[in-house]
Length: 362
Ligand SMILES: *Cc1c(COP(=O)(O)O)cnc(C)c1O
Image 1: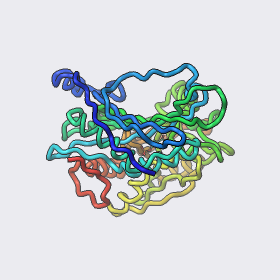
Image 2: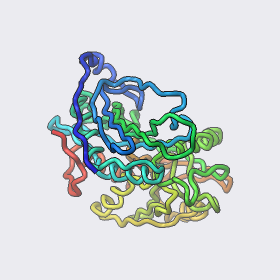
Image 3: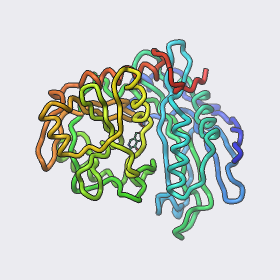
Image 4: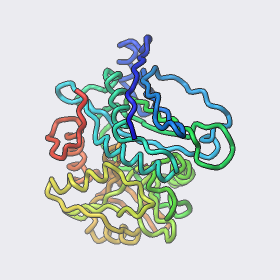
């Protein structure tokens, strides 16, 4: 696979400094987009070509575009952080690039070379560097690479034409008022993914399937839904769009990757980072019965969720058809907060990057 070089066609009318600063003062999440985007095309026979950085703009989509009908679509999410010296770095973009290939394979799409994925993200961050929030807080520039079938027709088959795009959106701190535990609903009526399905792929379809369950969780008074295995509804898989960790004293355990879980890069990083901090870390199987029992007998001391958007989120109250219980008195746990700080310190350049996770852009 050859990697096309990106032709730079920047905007002649980017937002003014004042307009951009006003957005950066209160960016929220996924509401504002930077001045540019990167697009790369793929067509049968030609492969990847026509890589361009252009002004951010709407696309013109044919009503019979295959993606609108059959959802052949995948995406990624990663962040660029401002470092103390003013430079900018992204967190493990190579891992996102490889997962993007894995997702592509599952959805019968062409694989984008790792190098092209990283080049596209780098080009956008370089161009829109002024959009990366200042060092100091937990704000960042969220990158959203995605790819979809771009062929017109209603026949059901893999498309022979695709479009890869990267857009970027400034993201404020996830917990502007301080870290607060979320309440969760253990979902038995709905499942996110089934064995042999596409749970390990980052694809919009998995999110479409999650919305009704999320609404059910909200109706039960919970912030988030916890996914259980599809066959028995007993084994814990994930929380919303995040992976889960169970803290047993000085050991942290995360559900093993059975194929129906999404292999989070935050999850993977924490397996190593916890060991650096002197904790034991492991992958394993945790059932809902065990979750309740071990909380009640005091051996399970904390539970948290992790993912790029929120980094680490403590879990407070758990509600289910089998009862209700509360983790670490509804307060953010000590191990949870220690890991959260350690990871954020690496990402924002405050702590040494022993694992070579940061990709520096200058
Ligand atoms: C993206 C995602 C995660 C978290 O992955 P990160 O790489 O850590 O951001 C977890 N679960 C689901 C379902 C996801 O889509």
